[in-house]
Image (cartoon, rainbow, N blue to C red; front, side, top):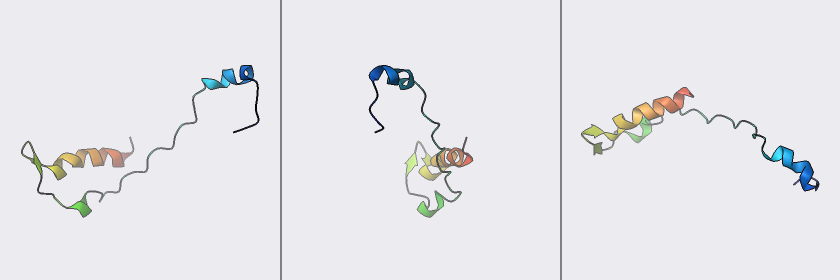
Length: 62
């Protein structure tokens, strides 16, 4: 914590937005591949196929 200051000097800074966080590290292109295709289906679709779009979106960094 920095040096103590009177409350009235700190109030103006209280509502300031924090610095922008760093974007998350992109997921590598092979993030799902080491896991293989599990023998798990959800509504008739393999779990690997269901997760692929989410991993692709994370990797894109958007």
